[in-house]
Image 1: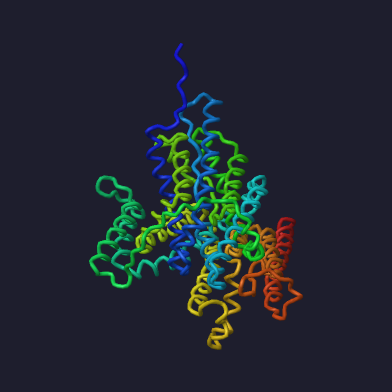
Image 2 (image 1 turned 180 degrees about the horizontal axis):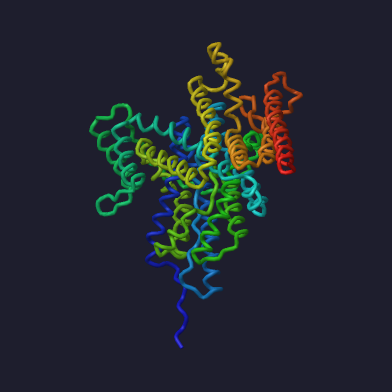
Length: 516
């Protein structure tokens, strides 16, 4: 009798899968750097030496555990076609934390160290939340419709991924529009490039080649600059620096928690997808692994959370087994410590990467409208609006040089500023609640919609959403001289009460009609 086939450490299919997963992670690090350095003026060198190493370590830890889980499943089942669950940096929250947490702290304080410490603390809070909610993700998924869960992220796609990268793109339009054209052709229209070349890679490489070619020819003027790439050895070591940023990080819980929740729910979905594809992993173990990887990243300086990726069936179709996650984890983790991942990120110009950000935003928007029933489209639209308010605040604060310049606003804008501030603060959670409320109304679940209005009322009273503090801090309403939070809370409460009254009278009318 022939001996059973051995499960390979690395097969030919793992090579294709490795490039796909590795590039996804590198792209997210480029996105993080592009938003912070290009959008907010944060010092890029600090990102390379402090933020990327710990962020990359979280990917290493998660992919190593997923590799082990795949090999254990193969041994238990005797199968040689088991595909490891792919893990990497979560794109929506990498963008969201950069735009809604790190960027605002930097604009307010101009303190890179404090901004980093707040980012670390935020990761630890997200990680702890994810550990707790690993056991309750199914319940949340049932309570909050996809219009709320996905609509809140679609708002990031419209306002923040749609507008902010366009500024970088048009700062060097020759580079940006060529790269953007390649993205639209290959990724949006899904038309094949010559030789079947991958569109995202070609777009970035073409934009980069144009940047350096035109730049060295003297055709880009002040828009071109070359600096030596960082190759510093910066091992991600455990740090207690997050303690200094903990107080400010608590302020950003209304932004951070929804992102953690989305990866928990996404993890449930992708584990089910893997199960359908033939690889039956424990949902709890998959979720706990991503939670621990996020905690490890936060404790060693990371500022972006890890998550299982949606593409398990695609990696399986490529022939990926467990070798591709092992190789990706080692490349990203060791590359973050040795500096060569930071060097790759450093050499890519913002204008060449901006089209990828816009494409990610378009995909998020498209996924939202594809996944949600048509009757929920107005609810999705409702969930998009708070992100627009946050975008306005970002631009105002950049133009004013930070929150300290509030007194320089013209009288009309000064009157509008507190309202827009309240709409923008906690925008992710606000969008999730608005989307859920609108979806429940569309489904004629009036009491559930009223319950979400009640949650909005309670949260707005304490600044969890609609905080009137410029930093987005929570507060006790009786300690405030401004009554805006009380008025907002009263408005939500009145709306919720009105829904209850309509439900009761509607029920009475229906009962009378049935009796008649």
